[in-house]
Structure formats: C-alpha cells, structure tokens
Image (cartoon, rainbow, N blue to C red; front, side, top):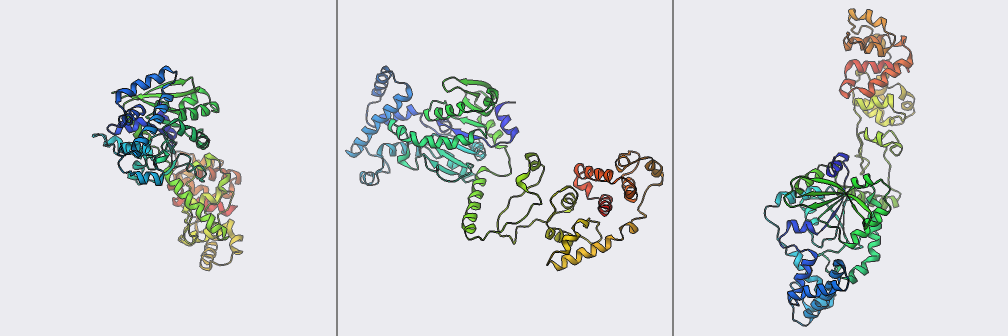
Length: 517
C-alpha cells in the first residue's frame, strides 16, 4: 500500500505543507526564489551583474540559501533607496504613504509580483481537485506569499484561520482548519520574510510556531507538495521532529510523504528515502499525476471538515465563557452512558451526535431498537423522562418491556399524560401470558423442540421455521435456566439487525423475558 492509499485507508486528516512549486504549477511566470531575486534585480541593476555578484558570494564559501539572503538584503537597500529618490515607481504605493504607514517598498514590489500572476490554462480540473483536497487538511503550513490557498478554501465555501508569522500563536485553537503562513503573506506587506535580518527576527517567533506545529505532527500523517526541502525553517522544524519521533523507521516513512515532480510520470511511485542531514526517513513520491493524489486525499471523510471543527469549537467556547460566567448553562443528558469512559472501540460502534443549543429543542426520541438494546444491555438506565415520552409515542398494544422502570416512574412528578399511558401499559402487561397462550407453533416441530435443552439450541435448529421456534421459546421460557435465557437474549440483541429485532415474534420474546426479571 503506497503512502497516499495509506492516508485514505486510515481516514486521517493529514497535515499538508505547501511550497512554491504549487504556485509555479498553476500560475504563469510564478518565480522560484532565485527567479524572484533576478526579477527584482532588474529594477535597479543590469541582469548580468546578478550572476557576477552571485558567484562572488559563492567564492566566499556561502551556500545557495545564504547567497539568496545576501542578495535580498542588497536588493532591499537599493530598491528602497531608488523608490524614495523617485527613480523607481511602484504600483499601489506612494512615497508619502510608504513613509507614514512604514510600508516597505521592497516588499510592496514583491507583493505586486505575486498579486498579478495569471492562472495557467487547462489546469481548472486539477485546481478544483486541489481545493477539494486542501479543505481535508487538518491544518496547512506554507512558505508561499500568495493567497492561492485561501482562495481555494473560499471557493469551496470552507473557512480557514490564517496565521501569518507568529500571529495566532496565543489563540486557543483546536489546530484544525488553520493555515500557517510562516514566511508572511502579500496581504500584510511588511510580514514578507526574505532577507537574512527577516529570518533572524523571525527565529525566536518561529520557535513558538514550530512548537505549536510539532505538538500535532505525531498525531497526523504529513504530506509535502511543491517542496524541495531547501528552506531552512522547514528543515529545522523537521529536524526537531525527527529527533523526537517516537516511531520506528518504517513507521516514520509511512507518516511523512514528499511529492517530487517528475515530468510526464502518470504513475505514483513510492520509495523509502532518508535525509541524512536532518536524519529523517520519509516516503518519496515521484509523479506528475497530482490530480490523482488530490482525488485520493479528498476521499477522506470523517463526517465534517477540519474547518467545521474550529468553527463549532469557537462557538461552543463562546457560549461557555459568556453564559457559563453567569452560571446560566444547563447540562442536558442526551446519552445514557458516561461518554468519557467509552473505549475507542465502543465509540466506533455507536451512533453519536454532538449538539449544543437551546435545551428546549435538543432532544432525540429513541426508536424501538434503541430502547430495547438499552433496556437489556446498558448498565446506565435511560432517563425516565425519555422512557415515558418514548412509550407515550408507541401504540399501547405493542409489547415493550417497562418493569425495571416501575419504581422510578412512581417517584416521578409531572408528565401526567405520559405516566397514565405507562400505567395503562403496565396493567395490560399483567395479562401477557394469557393473551399469548395460543400463539402459533408448527405441530411437526414440537418433538424436535422437546429434544433441545435451552433457547439457543432451539433457535439454531435449521429444520424449523423462525416464528415457530421463537413462539415455543416464549411459551416455555419459565422452564429454561434464566442464565441460558439471558445469554440467548444478549446474543440476539448483539448480532441481529435492527430490522430483525423489530419483528413481532422478537418483540414478544423480549416482552416475555422482561416479565421474568
């Protein structure tokens, strides 16, 4: 099973890192980091001088990352100087405005470049699939300046909490439906991180960003798109992650996937890889078929979007903080068990609903199978108010166990009509055995039944019809061991479908058993 199939199979919202390769894939003339610097260089210098200066720095022993930072530093100084001298005009920025509002001309120029990118033709289907995938991300981390990700959320009607730089670090969030733009955004000009001094200023803040991100990384698979893993901030984050990773190498590789663009490759090729400089094992995914990756991840379905978790969490917290401060909140018992004590397996087997609102309207009537399973299988009794309302909604002739609620109903105040219906049902059930003494049993089956020793052995007889077996068990229930009857009833309730449990002969069976308890 490859990395993407594994994400889909486990149905886990991934954490997705989006790099500049994604912007370059979908927009004409979207620059790489070096391409951006060359374009900026042309505003104040001859282009050939760029390469001369680059190789001078190279000869000084600097790596490409450090060289790019130095080039950006030089460009910031020269572009700002040219702008304030009136030698360079920058769209959407006047000298007076830049001075009064302390807007960086250098960064305004960068923002203009990314604001005016044109979408590539013929990529509409893939971009739509990208949007369908990205809204399934637990949260998104990007070093991109542009607003492509936010636009994708908007086009799908999904909300996204945008955190630029260190913004959002001290907000209480669920870390679902969040976007972390760790290098800034064109929506906030001065936030753009590109020079050495920018990285230095952000270093302390990004340590906090990384701490917040790292606290969630071990809980979700991680997918990188549009990255070559050359960014120092991202590498520092992953190095810390790998140093503290609590899993084996094979599991680490299954949790981190890095998609590398391979021109023309329609297959999705998976290889286990290792980056020795940060000691990280991961799955390398070579493909040009991004559409298929997007479609697979978009198939993750947990019944809600990550953005919806954050939306409801904020609303829920607001209700608690505002109303709770006034001691005005009511708790409404809508479950018959303490949910905090349920195991993961038990939660998976239950149909659960989380709701909050006006308690006049938060109510869900159980159906017959809900009621009957709770009656015999649950250790926590259903609230008596719910019992009475349920019974009041059922025809009085329908056999429904009520015996274990007799005392609680007698002590209850209010619900007059419901209590009267309960009493009428109790009186009617006193004649249960007399009314059912002639229920049908095939005469040819009786000799076979008499050879069986307990309800289970009778029920398992394949040569007898179902109604005949169940009716015989009902009429002879008092002659069987109560333990055997209880085991038989429990097995029926745990293994049979709701449709089967609701049949008349099964209802009669449960009614008879309840009268023996």
